[in-house]
Amino acid sequence: TGLTSNTGYDFLISSDCITDYAPAVSFVTKCEVITTAFDEDFGAAGATFADLSCWEVVNGGDSNPWVLLGQASNADSNATGNYWNLSYNSVAHDDYLYSRPFTVTVGVTDTFSFKAWNLSQSWPEVIDVIVVDSNNTLIATLESDLLLPTPPSTFEYDLTAYAGTDIRIGFYSSTTNQNTARIDDFSLYASTNWTGTTSSEWADVSNWSTGAVPTSSDN
Image 1 (cartoon, rainbow, N blue to C red):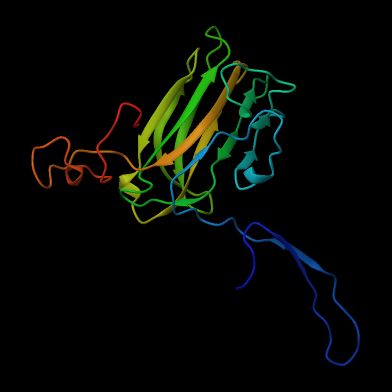
Image 2 (cartoon, rainbow, N blue to C red; image 1 turned 120 degrees about the vertical axis):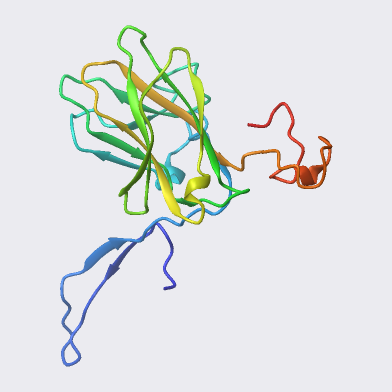
């Protein structure tokens, strides 16, 4: 207790009788589990990536894993700034990109969305969208072989089935020699659903799951 999340520490073990220490042991604490809604655009062009250290890349296949690219050297007008990129290889991908961990709470963090695209319709990329626990153990597959479009589209998924659970969202690829998958604008939020709790009146906020009447800009 008392340690800061997502921080590296060293600890030493010493003898009671003599001034002698065992070799230092290093470890990094787990990332804090987010409990509120958030929007992640992965930083404006040219921004540092330090705040994204709780996103995790696991590369089990080829030499081209998920990487975070910036507009300065890899301009893409489909992205608002930095974005995640997975490039093709002649060796099969076995690559995961995991979001920061968060708790699913109905009416707070029960829905997420992201923008994704592929650079070529001739060599379409597909990914699996999965739910994992805090140890990256698979809980469920939300969608298999999601075809990434050209131009980009926004994809939205309901998480109410995982209420009360700490989870991460994973993006997985096992393709070979396709083209390029890109992901941007990850958002976690509350879905706005009609409940009709009080009446049939559209403008009555108590009839909506978020306590607010939806507008044209709502997800």
